Image 1 (cartoon, helix red, strand yellow):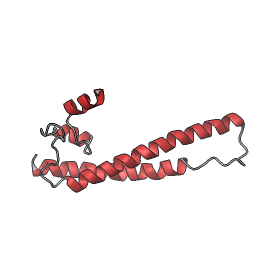
Image 2 (image 1 turned 90 degrees about the vertical axis):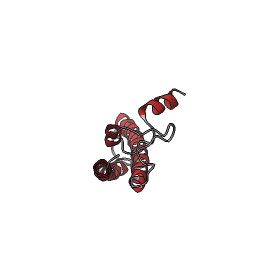
Image 3 (image 1 turned 120 degrees about the vertical axis):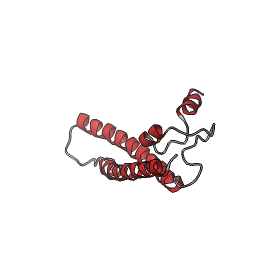
Length: 115
């Protein structure tokens, strides 16, 4: 991987981190408990509780992705960055631009997900 490609990936990571930080803040606000004293109907309360659960799951996923992006940003200058952890082949630049936190090539990721 060329230094220019690494810099392009670094900028993509930084942009994704900024976006995730905004999402985390928003999901945090939306994940607050539904107060029982709110004057909303029973069905609306059920919808609010369901929506809260969805937002909590999105918050957890965003935090997980943020952690992986921070690890990728820390590792970008190492010689192992951009190589599959399983087969050790280079991960294509386009994949790293889409998912800079990727630690597996597409082939290995598919094999592992199939079990």
